Image (cartoon, rainbow, N blue to C red):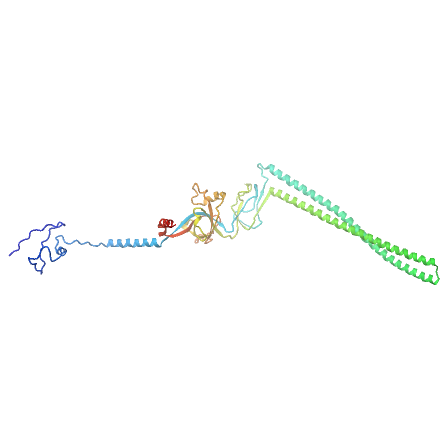
Length: 463
């Protein structure tokens, strides 16, 4: 007998009509006496077994989304790794120039003058002591009085020198005459002493003969052969001869004393001549220096103080030079170049010897030739003076700024990795080439830069 249709159930929340509840196949219906409020199966099971008119909703996976998700995860991991392991180097850009390690010599005139001769050319090698310029102070424009005054001084000094030369000649002649007279007196006294010596020898012989004659007369008198008067006559003759010998001795002594005095006068005259000559020589030397100085003020010779190569010639013949602007610059031969950078005070704080530097030469564009590596070897402890800063301000990268020249500049010496740049061109570097340099100063992790405000605040709180 056909089963009566069940009344339609209410629609569920999805808008679809509820399905007819039928017992599962193979499952016996529960007895009528069981409680309808306690079903055998859970409602979820029954709901899952219900057939749906629209079918089940299936979410399909797209391959492109998987690839995008994988790439995003890889990028996130790389970003985290970069932040954790990556580092950043703070750099500062400064300017400078190449200079020789031994330095260069700027040759300047000692005073304002006019170039008379230029004996050196640009780039010419010179040797120590070689004449570079000849300058003159006899300037035709507005300097006639100065030139005449200097010429008058030179003439006066030359006249005084001539007078001293004449005085020296007269003094020498007078002293030489005195010395000659004394020498002649000494010679005469020597000859006279020789004669007295001969007379003494002859007188001693006469005394000996007189003694012998007196002795014979005494013997004859004792024998009675001669009278007493004859014997006494011989004795008086002997006494007279002895007195003459003594007189010659006294004359010899007196002459010896006189000769010693004359010789002493001769020595004094010679010493006086030497002293006077030395005094006049000193005065002549002093006048010579004064004359040379006066002539030097009229004509100045500039010589090379050392071996090197002349460059940056400024004085052409006929031009006026002063004691401020250099005539030329002398670069030593076979010199080693170094870079001198000029950094402001806000940059120099973290620069230390050993700091790496990357140099860009203005003569060799870095876009084509690249950079040159260097290393800081010294940092000045005191800034350049105000006068120097006005000249060095052009090396600063922001030299066009209004306050570029007012900020103190410190000199940083950099040792170059190579003396030839660039490597492929093998062009020699020259003193004076301007450079721009990047100072590779403080290197820190990226996360330290990101968390620096927090770390600073934490340190401040702990302090």
